Each structure stands twice: as C-alpha cells, then as structure tokens.
Image 1 (cartoon, rainbow, N blue to C red):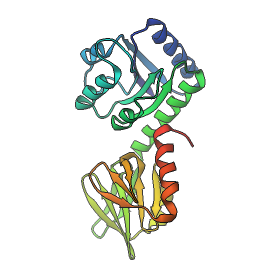
Image 2: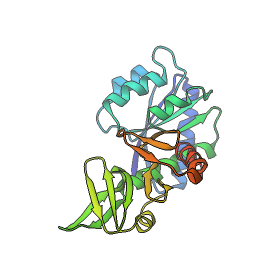
Image 3: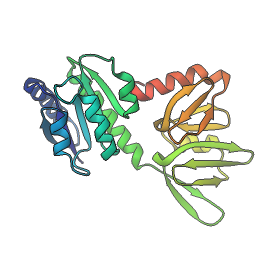
Length: 236
C-alpha cells in the first residue's frame, strides 16, 4: 500500500524531523510512503490537486496563512484527505474536531507519537473499506460502513440510516454491532451510531453531521462522552 503524505511546516528542521520519523515508521510497516513538503498554508493550497494526498501533517502556527485557516480552505476542496495537526499548543483543539482532523500531535513529539498517528490513519482507512452485507426483501445489498450514520432498532427489524439511503433489515441490533467496527457505539438499547459522523453531545443526545439526533440512555451518558473523546483522540 502506498500512502501519499504532505508535511506542512514553516520550519525546515521540523519538516526534516517529521520526515525522518515517517521513514522510520515506513521501515517497520507494510506500507510505502510518498512524502512531499510545503513551507506554509499558501504553498499547500497552491500544490493541491484532487486525490494528491491521503494524509497531511499540518502545523498550526505559521506566518501568512496558519494551519487552521489552510485546513478550513482545504476542506472546501477536499473532504477525503485526512489531517493531523502538529503544533506547540492544543488551544485550537475544537477547530481540529470541526475540520475532521484525525489526530493532534503536540511538539516536540516522539517516534511513538508519529507511529500512533499512522496506525490511527490506517485503522480509519480500513474502516472506510468495510461493508455491511444485508438481505432485504428484494435482494442482497452491500452498504459501505462509513456511510452509515446510525442504526435504529424497531421491534423485530432494524432501520439503517445511511448518508444516501435508509435500509430495513431483519438482523437484530446485537448482530449488526458484532459485524461493525469500534467506530460504532451503542448509546442506547435501541440505537447504534457511527462515531465518525458524531458532531457533539447535546444534553442526552448525539448530534450527527446530517442534522439528526440520536438519543442517549441515562445509563450510557458518561460512556458516550468518553467514547466520543476516545474516537477523536485515537485513544483506546
């Protein structure tokens, strides 16, 4: 597998240091890394082409165009490329979540930090390729797991709410949960949601990125907050 990566940092020594750590990771993993560098956000945007990068390590504090603003402009062009913010402060953590950054590394970071970010990236890519096989009344369907926003149990059936369709299945919610990955969290006895589509928790419900609201049982409220934080930070 080849992974195309851009390192965007205004300091040459930081670009070199991260490149070295990524090459160290490559040497011990079954991947090939195609590395490029940019000195600031403006250069990143000038270099961008559709599907050019799979992953960007993006410094926040840069002159001219900082990393948060560069990411905001990039997201208008590209929602596929993953972003890891690399910086000296976590004060922009909320912007990182809103811009769908998969990780947030605080400088000076270690080889272990970089390895962890890469493993988290590969885990998310594997999840994007996962499919859920269902037999409906008319045929057998395959639904990309990443497109599923949440699943609702209704009596003897489950309704799967995906980005572009709703599908009913006779499979139970426990069986569906066993076929899906750790991205899916049981927040209620009747609801299973995809944390990748969760925006935030409001009172006793998850607000999802399609505008829907998924209820959280009182017994699962604390676990729900922990699960969302763990998903966003890549912690087990």
